[in-house]
Length: 180
Ligand SMILES: [Zn+2]
View 1 (cartoon, rainbow, N blue to C red):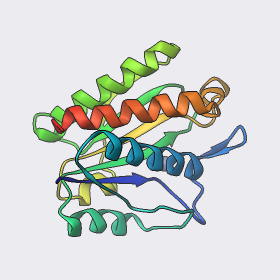
View 2: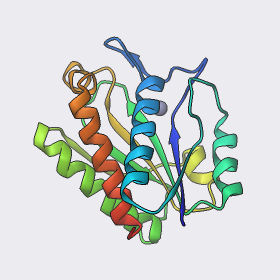
View 3: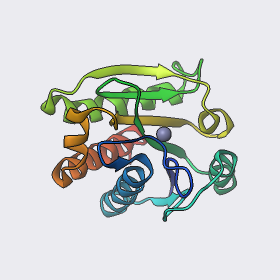
View 4: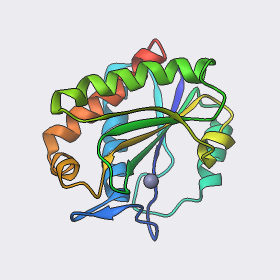
């Protein structure tokens, strides 16, 4: 049974982005736990989280955790900030024509299919030299699920129905990408 590692960004003393009454570390954990539940309910998979509580975990530890498990996939969950709106996903630079890029295509489309129902902007499939993408030895993706400093985006992120829908689209995207 494939092992999937979900990586709720930030935690503990590191809140991540903060705005409109929300902290990134809380949202990433809520969504991570929900995606785990959905994956295990719908597929034969072993889903592990790099953290299951509000604790600080070093970036290197997150990658080591997945590498030591021999995970089939690593999915890092984040929320954006900096004055924009919408969704974007990241893979390690130069991997777009590999299995990593193929999975990004599938997951990005699945999530955008859900988000476009809310007229949210598709900011695109991107590449970045992020630690968790670079240091993981299996295909990896990092999702930036809307902007914490956008009132429009946080109104959605505060809505449990939206969070469930977003989590469902992430889980089904992972299921499709891995042919589960
Ligand atoms: Zn983050």
